[in-house]
Image (cartoon, rainbow, N blue to C red; front, side, top):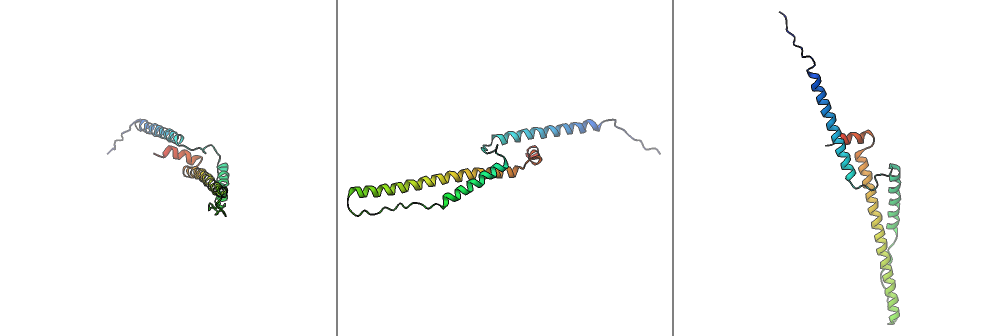
Length: 143
């Protein structure tokens, strides 16, 4: 008894090519979409190299440590030895100047800490996205 063999000439090849073209087109579309989303995110330190970013983080960490180590100036007023108006005015001016210096230092510290936080966020973003082929694959395959 003979077994019949049915041959489909070239029937699977167009289907495989269609699936391949659709898959590559989907990956390309997804890559472009993720790249556009990355560009829309505010990342002011994106253009810095990894070495420069690391150097900036180190410098800002030292600056924040230096500012935190500075003691605050005393804002306690000294009691004038007399009831002279001039003594009271000078005492007020010393207390006011110390308060101003403390507020200025606190403001500077907060600014440096904010920049340091942004730099660390950029480093974390780079670590999560990877680099080279890892970054390209993330853009193409992340939905």
